[in-house]
Image (cartoon, rainbow, N blue to C red; front, side):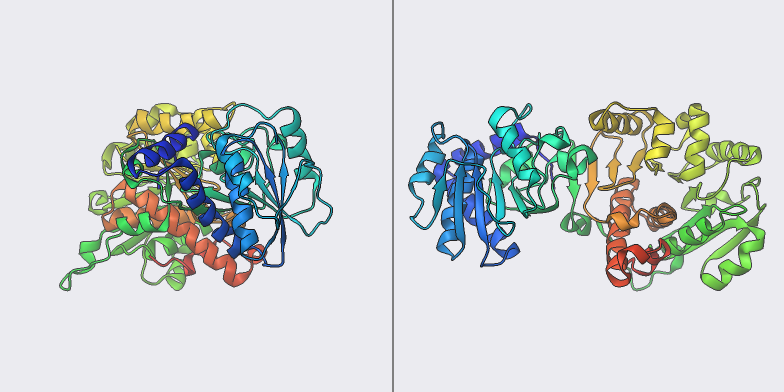
Amino acid sequence: MKIFTGKQLSEWDRYTIRHEPIASIDLMERAAGRLADALQRRVPLCSRLTFFVGKGNNGGDGLAMARILSNKGFVCRVALLFPDSLNDNCTVNLSRLPDSVSVTHDPYCIDSPDDIVVDTILGSGFVGEARGKVLEVIHYINSLPNYTVSIDLPSAMNAEFGNIYADIVHADLTLTIECPKLAFMLPEAGNACGDVECVGIGLNDNFRHTAETPFNYSDGDFIDSLLMRKRDKFSHKGNYGHTLLICGSEGMAGAAFLATGAALRSGCGYVTAMLPQEYIPALAAAYPSALPIGKDANHFDKIPYDIDKYTSLAIGCGLGQHSHTIRSFEQLLDVYRRPMVIDADAINIMSSNTALLGRIPNNSIITPHIGEFRRLVGQWADEREKIAKARELAETYSVVVVLKGAYTMVCLPDGNVWFNSTGNAFMAKAGSGDVLTGLLAGLLARGYTPADAARIGVYYHGLAGEAATDAISGESFCSDDIIRFIRI
């Protein structure tokens, strides 16, 4: 799913109006109907809805929604912020309100904590910062205990890079039109959205397919289109790849177990784990289908002589940064030229010697968390610069950058960026990244391209995390629970 800018979203409206063709007021009516249906599914019929209405098309959506929902049995009230300067669509929809919808010019009208606030003050075309009356009303809404629903995006949020958190509406639910906005993916603004639901309003599909944007959203339909489901009846395990995981050290052996367990769930034919020798019996007990190779407890000092037989490789989870490990990692970059997965201590080694970035095999996958990424590329001033740095890293070194976190970001060498749609905050536990590394390595071995392996891997990693936290309860969740719920 593409993520468009506010300007592109306005162009999409105009394109639909010209090419369907459809009148602007009729497109607004269709949008309001579908948004009203989405809201109706989310709130009890007995609710009283108070619509805070601006003077533009977002306000027009709100007025039309108030009429539609009133006709469906909801008690609706409209608070007009600018009754004397409504645009044409707003004016038409104001004139269509039935008597059952009360209208006030007082935006400070909430008199019950049970009222549901519907924010239709500013839409995705807004740029700049809220000021004056709009800012005062936003602060008023945020001071209320009431459940708040924003239409398209929280008012005063810039669709691309958000705005100051305190000066945008803090919604519990955002019903966004057609596609998520880039700002939703970013911590500076994303926390203001609450739950997000995309609501299709029938905008022209040709525009969706042809309009260009580097930003995309990995949803279930897209991921399903990438999967290789079919297996030849006469195939064997050798047809599905062999991954090598170089991971674990004294006190960090758990990382090897987590990566191994996830790789085994990926669909690849063989999984070999190189880990400290003394943990091999425990690995055999936990994962008897994995093939172990022993190494020193404190460092990685010997590259397997048959390294070329592995169709993918992952290195770094719990590996440590011993001088022998650093030397062997440098040698590995010279002798293994297939795409590999580089995580954790392998990233930290590169942070200390950035010249190693130029020796990484093309299309390798680098999987930093936010701290590792900062050590690798330096500090950034804001989220806009963070994204730019991730894209630059991917393009400069022809690698796939998987920047882990909420909406994990996958940056491809061609400049495109994919935000993941799965996962939750309960996955913020030690070891979750090790699970992801193993899963990515297995998918690479299975035969997926690095770009597809990264997008599929982060999606199913997050989906498994959601299933695990639902089954176990969030706070009690452990990273190894993810493995049991991986279902590709």
